[in-house]
Length: 137
Image (cartoon, rainbow, N blue to C red; front, side, top):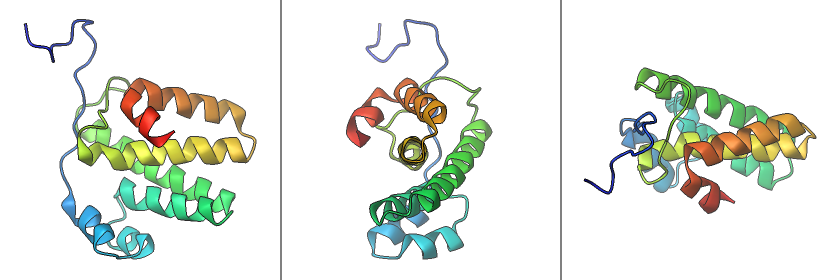
């Protein structure tokens, strides 16, 4: 028996395909705005926009960016076999954009008093990747 075998019989983990373009541009110093304009389907770019907006106190703007990244990520997950539940491992780097956007959406929802959405998104993050929930706080 492999240590990676799913003993609970749940869905297999979803691993999004690698899209290094946005990640490399962000790492090289391109602004998230420029990256989102060039790669509008990149959850990572939208999550970074959400983080920047949140850090400067623009919570509603952060919420909008995070929601965009979250929905772009859901689209990508569904295209790659995800059926609405199951693991989305943080350890697989291409999944991190979606997980970061989900975390940013929870954070912004809490900040604007959307408690139900905050709780739903927080639980979704934990259910998708307990590692992401720990790393992102």
